[in-house]
Length: 340
Image (cartoon, rainbow, N blue to C red; front, side):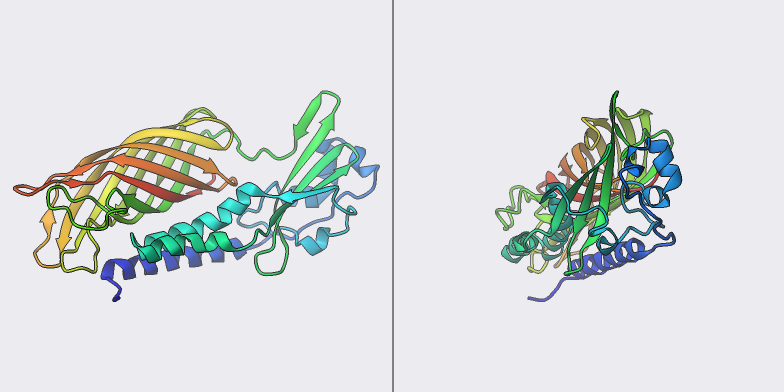
C-alpha cells in the first residue's frame, strides 16, 4: 500500500522529534562526584551530607539536561547488595507508551496500526527499583537495561529523622512562573472501529497532533492555566482511498488543570480550530471555518520533565450544503514539561 503525503509528513515529524530527544538525553556537561559510604557518613543530616558529597547534589533526584547520571557500574557494589529489587511499573509503562503512540499515529486507523501499537508491550521489562537501607537513609535507585547495559534513570533519597521522613529531592516544586510545554500525540475518532465512509455523517478516524505553549500556576500546586497552539491532521476517511478526506487545522487551546496529587492532573478547556480545511482526493479543498471544541484532559507525570496524557474533545465540523463531520476524538499524548 503506498504511503500518503500525510503519513510521510508524520514519519518525518516524529523522526525529527525522536532525534532531538535522543540528542538532548545524551547531552552531559557535569561529572558525577563522590558518594557517602561509611556508617558514619549515613548518620549525618541532609544539609551536611549534600555539602560534603558532590555525588549527592550532582544528580538531583532524576536525570536532567546538562547532568550526567552515574552509570550502574559506578554504584554496583558501592553500598553492597540491594535489600529489595522490584519492577518499576510507572517507568515500564512510560518507555513503552511513547513508541506505541508513535506507531499507532504513523500507521493510522488500521489493523497494522493496532498491531504496531501492541509491539512495544511484548518486550520483557527492564526497569527496576533497587532499594538500599543505609544508616538514617533509604535510597531507591531506578534502573533501566534497554540495550543490555544497565543505567541509572533516577533515585530517591529519604532521611528518616526523629520528626518523620524527609525527602532530599522534591520532584515537583511549586510552580510560580511560566513553564514552556510541548505535547505530541495520536488521535483516534469514532470512525476508527468502523473504518468506512458514512455519507449521512462522516466521523474522523485518526491522525496526529503536535502542540506547544505555556502553563502558569494560578494556585501553586493546585491549579494551572494552560495555553497551547498546535497543528492537527485528522483523517475523516482512509487517506489512501479514492474517497479520502483529510483535515488540516491549527487549534489554539485554553484550559485549566487541577492537581489531583503530586503527579496527576485533571483539566477542562476549549479549543478553537483555525484554518480548518477539508482535502479530498477527487475535489478542491473546502474551508471548514473555525469550529470550537470542548475538552477534558488528564495527565500523569513520570518524571519532572515528562508525562503521558489523554484528551477527549467534543467537536463538529460544519459543511455548507453537505453532511457535518463528527470530530469527537480521544488523543493519547506524550508531554514535555520545561523548567518553571
